[in-house]
Length: 505
Ligand SMILES: Cc1cc2nc3c(=O)[nH]c(=O)nc-3n(C[C@H](O)[C@H](O)[C@H](O)COP(=O)(O)OP(=O)(O)OC[C@H]3O[C@@H](n4cnc5c(N)ncnc54)[C@H](O)[C@@H]3O)c2cc1C
Image (cartoon, rainbow, N blue to C red):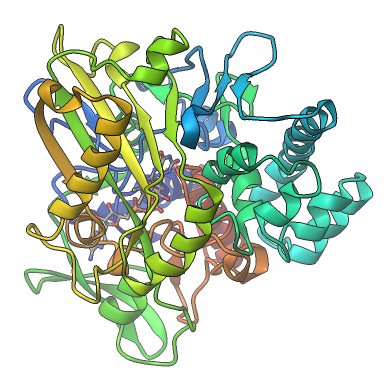
């Protein structure tokens, strides 16, 4: 069977690998000059290796990584000690070392029972993540089944709130301390006061690095090393990868995908087409207008600012607690700001309490920056998909840099004197440079409206046309589960028609 895949994001590469392993003749067509999609490393500043969009490792399913032999093909991951520090308003903080022992914290008044509640909260979420992890390879799972699994395991508080409540609703069952609530609010991709944020937190809890469940880590050389290793693994299976080859249209024969048209107008026939693009690109750009799945246009996106630095800029709080600048460093707004911003940002406004997740990869990876220099990567959790109704452009993206610098100067008063260069990735860049329509992070929101049976299916309403990107089950992040499940679905749905791997040899 001749298969054409649109896009070489990590899910397109994973899907290609499994289909090629079954003996199919697979070609991938990527619009950009290199594979990876949102999972890439670039030399944004001379001599620096920057994870331009996705920065943190852990969500990649070890099953996929092992099957693709990614370590053999060059992938090297590592953990840091400490794991994380969350810097909170009023000089409060929660510091989590990797070594055994309780997190160090300064969070105001905290009773013994609240401290026990905080530990119980994370313990319950960890148990829920362990139960949910295997479901990522079972795309028929429904939200009701998940609730039942959690209830059976005695995780009734989590079960009650996972799809119907918010992370704040759940937290209130364990702790009331506002600094702890604000710290936990940084652990979910959605706003912690909104429905779906509990699942978001558990989703992140399914991370695994170096066989440590729940652990987030890093990739030596940046996240692009994952997709570079995937590319080599695919090529070893005979997958043909074409870059700078943009797809204009999916060719149809009645209701059946029959091939692809490239940007230069040339066409090629395929028995089966798989799209790694976001669903808006596939259904609104590459296919004729027709009855399509109803998907809401996202209003909330995210962004990044990368800084090339002459040395490590001193952060007042980090120095106070003798931090080594390794691991994840979070700047959390108050819960009042989270609640206010959950209304403002969807209306196109900049957040009032900007939430930042940062790391200095160069403190642990000598390939990240030239000797003596440092790299700081900053994620801005919530940005409006368009600014006051206007698309993001080179001029208005300055507000992102200004907002990030304002916060960084509060944390590190001399910060600016260390900056050699900066690079902003705005929601507009996610749309224009990475071809994700409407700057839809995770291709679709990770809310209760779009998880489990409500996420998109791999098979589309067109025969022989499949979707394998982050908009499909189980959702976003660099998991590879979507690409794997899509390949499995294709093999199951077309078996009988397809030659097996053995038959082709
Ligand atoms: C700001 C931000 C930070 C993030 N941070 C993290 C993180 O730290 N860790 C993590 O695990 N996840 C993170 N994520 C999420 C993660 O990056 C994505 O969910 C994941 O990379 C999506 O992979 P994918 O293969 O499904 O799609 P994509 O990576 O979007 O790949 C789609 C591919 O299709 C190509 N394409 C599109 N249109 C065409 C066309 N017409 N012709 C040919 N090719 C086309 C694109 O160029 C792209 O290569 C982050 C996301 C964002 C936006």
